[in-house]
Length: 217
Image 1: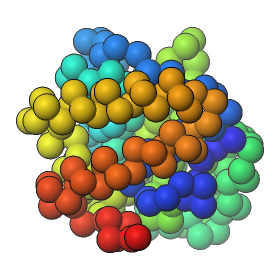
Image 2: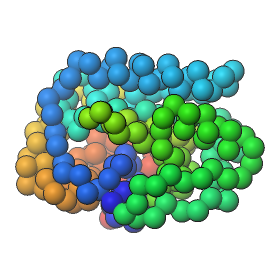
Image 3: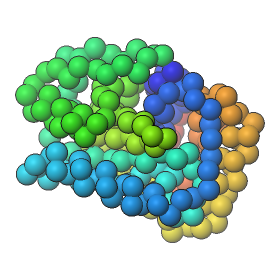
Image 4: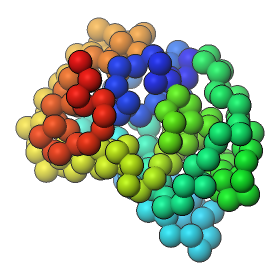
């Protein structure tokens, strides 16, 4: 079941392709940065002359951190029109079918460019203001998240990643937490995701996070 904002507490989390898959945490793989680089190169070609920022985010972007083996890619754009998915159908919980891009020409062309890199488009997938794409083949998964450069989503993803990259004690604590939760909540991705919420919020509050969910009870 694709994860949506309705299923998790807080809006920071990167959404899973399928919530039916078990939670599997593996040791850090030094090949992950190279896998990201190849995906980024392909995406940049699809953008043509457009100057979108692209970043490796999520746990696979933090050296030494055990993680679910998913390459999460952030594309930060300046043009609001690219994110206008208001004319599209909403992703249906429990399905993984592609969403047909509709709306203004800039949005449709942008989405089709990423789909041309062999990703499946899922629209906003529960988080307005962000476009979500996934690919899973040959045992490898990659997700693309597109949002405004000045959005809280972009800022908090980069703040969290950069904090962990420079605070090894927090990397160890996060890794320990994830392994414990994965063992206990292997078949409940929603509970696993929600159980990490307090740790992530504590880090973001220290790092200067701006997401509205940080101040929710």
